Amino acid sequence: MTRPRLLLAVMTLLLSVTLSVYAEPRLPNILLLVAEDLGPRVGAFGDEVAYTPNIDQLATQGTRFTQVFTTAGVCAPSRAALITGIHQQSFGAQHMRSSTGPLGLYYAQPAAEVRAFPELLRAKGYFTFTDRKLDYQFSGSSAGTGPFTLWDQENAEDYAWRNRQPGQPFFGLINFLETHESGIMMPTGPPHSPTHAATQKWRAKAGMVAPKKTHPDAVELPPYYPDLPEIRSDLARHYDNIAQMDARVGRILKTLLADGLARNTVVIWTTDHGDGLPRAKRELFDSGIHVPMIVRMPRTLAAFYAHAQLQPNSLNHTLISFVDIAPTLLGLAQIKPPAYLHGQPFLPARSAPRPTVPRRYIFAARDRIDEIPDRQRAVRDNRYKYIRSWYPHTPGGHTLAYRDNLDMTRAWRAAWRAQSLSPVQRRWFEAVGEEQLYDTRTDPYEINNLANNPKYAVELNRLQEALDAFMEQYPDTSEISENELRNSFLSANQIPRTPPPSIRQANGKLHLASDVGASIGYRYENRPWQLYTTPIDVRAIEAKAVRYGWQESEVTTTPSSLKAAVSNQN
Image 1 (cartoon, helix red, strand yellow):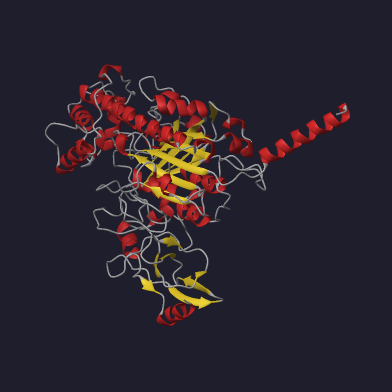
Image 2 (image 1 turned 90 degrees about the horizontal axis):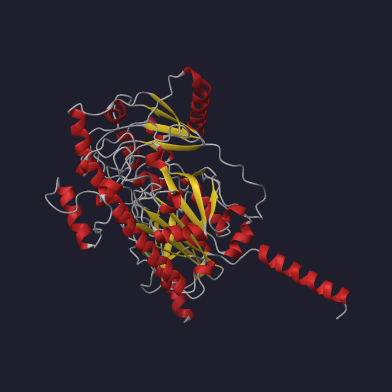
């Protein structure tokens, strides 16, 4: 071959490789791993006490996102925003927890067109699975209580991708209860309440009591905690639970690799909100809403998305809200994000019609916490945090039945009552006030309120206006009482039932429809329920529908006239 021809062949090969790299990849598998009640207490995020070798290894293979924030500091409201991609207070999902609140059971009700992103992935052809934890506010907390249309399998094992059809892409959401607040409560000895007793029994039966490894003297205390034995012991137990969670993450990733799926699976590891500790969980401080996140992107997909930050062992400081996860995952699956979403993709594809403008602010909300009413709203940029309270006289450290099962909470409150705390350490037991402003760069623990400091008037006004604009853009259902909200969702004090879908035949197909815009499922001969997305073959079926926040409809079957037509065809 002559040199010109050789050069032409090489150039052609390079061009074909380039085009193949940047061509749209086949649909990737997506695995979303969500630890409960955990801030950035991970070795890869700089915590020297945490023993997290598996997550640390994942970080070396992927990207650490350092500025990720949940929309609430407590699980059910946060998960409502995660699964829908819209802020929880915009559809009545802000109070903790709608299914067990003091007013009685009710479910939040998104607008009829809203679909949780797993259902949209399922409609695209994904096999979707999750474990026993739901907690979406339009469901209960456990499997079997939510819309049946989201998941092919609920209450599934960690490796449920093995149950999909050959070649079918999968999306799995796996939760890690090992790090839940309940695991910090004393696992043995006399229980402090019936709830605590039930927790002890359940975690012991599930093998979720971590062996003691972390020495209490090794933990570092933030300045707002007094140095008490109970606080050190509870923190040490938290680290032991983190190690147990990390080991399970390692088993899942090793199985994914052994099954030959790692090369085409996007793995995202994060947490549902901050630490399950007092002055962290349930709060709008960074200790309650700042979470770690790691994204490991297969090389072919990383090239498609063309982000330098997606190189192995890289850092990304983009400001991300939990409402950004839904549009991001939909984008990975080549699904156009619905217009109703409140977030934006933080991994926009190379082929996106226009570049995504980096997010300037994240927003978070706190409302009723178990038996205690509250309403706070927060806005944060890369440096400053502003919090507004409608209950300015309510302290963060109020009594709370569930949280008070923690030894450290009771010991801290006893020290406050004994007047043995420093001004910083007793502040959690004092009224929060109407406004708070923090410089998180110089004051990462948010202990110096700058709201009344005239030097920060410009920043205060800017964040006040940003929050006002956000609340004007997205309706806030906390403008009415929770009792009014609950009544608006109920019918004769009951959760309304979805009407059954209609079934008709046209053009040789069965067409299913819902008068209330509900999601519809169908099945043949008692097989698993399938998500209805397009007309199906004419044959005997069962069908049912569910609108989010409503009960499932009764099951309806193919009308007799259509059954006769089916019989004649056979």
